Image 1 (cartoon, helix red, strand yellow):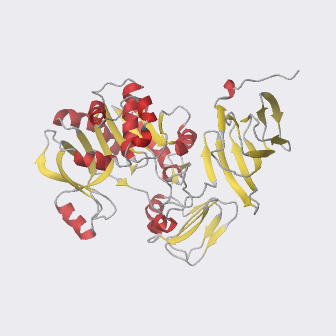
Image 2 (cartoon, helix red, strand yellow; image 1 turned 30 degrees about the vertical axis):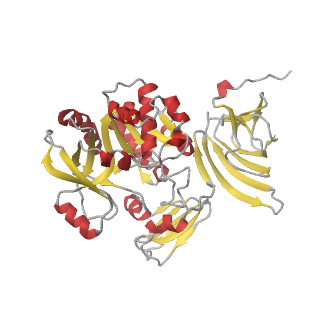
Image 3 (cartoon, helix red, strand yellow; image 1 turned 45 degrees about the vertical axis):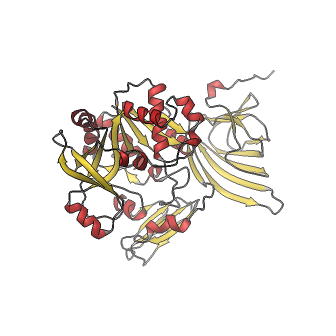
Length: 456
């Protein structure tokens, strides 16, 4: 079996901690086994290791999240990157073509697909393993996992069994699907034995490759990449699952939760305070999550979420917190905090002057032994001030050694990189007419690939 973890999302529902590059699955707000902070994706990756599934797992994601995945899961995690966001059907089409033509996976191999961020107990992954046998025993084209509902929720889609058993003792044949019903309709669905659709499904690789071929899409990975923009923006559920008649569902009667909004996430956060601040005793059922360097105090206010980050500040009742995505609407400002494979940065100041001149200041942390790609910028100049730690840098193939107090100038067009000899903190000031993250020409990623010139 191969396992594909779908990692996407625009980061709106858990704003301001989440943003376009740091979606909910990357927030380190859960408590791990050793008591250290853990993100949802780190938790799932740990559980996959315990279940013996990690070695067969791939992460399908978009460009904005690639470095975050490398930062949290390590640089060796197999990642299949979409050239642009186009929903889950194109993402799965690309993943299938990659497994088929790049990894030479047999068409008879079962591929299981799941979100990268379910909050589940370890037994859930045993059910994921069972999908392979369910497919083979029932002869179905698709096998899903359906969660036995604990309440008539309006937030989830429902899988309604047909009433006839599949040839597998555990699986049921699927009759139809119902998307986010009213509470009254959800109660009626539960009475019929309907299950929550948790977004987990499995199929033989040949099934999806054949479906792509029938639709006239390329099945070779390189060709599909070239025509990726032509694929329809549609979910795998709508394009494939709900159109397939030979589908079975495996019920799961264990712990499962979607931590997609502040009210559900705070139910699983161990401490009412993360970061600098205080929550008074009379502020009952209130959570404070603060990523800023200034303290936040909450007094006399109940049932609140107070979240503060470089991207903004949110104060909301827990009941109202799911509305944040609607309130933000289509607003999609640049992220003010990002994790990268080499460390992280925080935007501490940004000014755009009337004549169009821009100044952006970042506080950057580079981990020991890690390096920024060897790159250049066409639209900006940079000045680095080393605050702490020791680093090696390269400017136009010339190596230098820097320490606290050193100032490095990186004019527009200069080829440059920096590697932490120890953990390094620096202040970077960018100046130019258009300061955007896309203004990067990457020459190589690894330090050993940089062509050095020694001083004469």
